[in-house]
Amino acid sequence: MYDRKGKVEVSATLDEEDLLNAAIEADIEDFLLEEGDVEGTSTIFVEPTDTSAMAEVIKAMGHEECKTSLVYVSKAPVECSDEDFEKNMQIIEALEDLDDVDSVEHNMSN
Image (cartoon, rainbow, N blue to C red; front, top):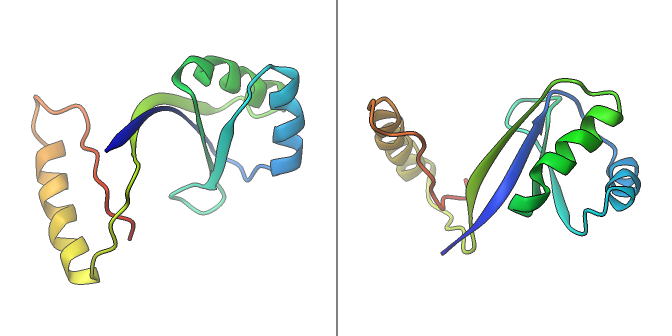
């Protein structure tokens, strides 16, 4: 149900064409550029083995601040109502507050 991906978060809005050219030069074959959760940020998903290389590409483009991690990305996102989304997020936040939990992945596409 999930693909393992490398995630690079940048506190800037990136130009997809510039990123594509830099990624090609670094032998990164595939990536997905999305708008970040916070306005004015970008999130890039790559194969796990390309995570460090993509971070270096971002730094070479002049963006020193980037955060990398490995995440699971849902293959089949599920839409849910706003009410159900809020209830599920309360449960996810409670789980994330537990000391033994590192992260919680979900397949909600809201």
